[in-house]
Image (cartoon, rainbow, N blue to C red):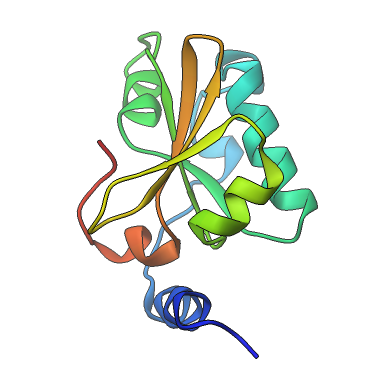
Length: 123
């Protein structure tokens, strides 16, 4: 049986309208993305969750700038993210974020795929 948080995340995915830009339509390369952000994406995917780079880091890459950090949206709940990453802290009360730290660098993950449908952005 799914928890309320998991049911809400699944409902958000069903209502999501997201555009994934195919690789041949942009100049972003994996080498432009930090190894730590890729670790977050790969580990979430390997565990069976959807995970995408979003936000200012993607914007910066499209503009040819070096991002200072990367944001990830995922179908995993904050608790599911925390189970995958020992270096994860859950922050926020109303909009829980899973904050994955690598040294002084971080990848922030929103509470669930709900962020993909227009709830407040990651801070």
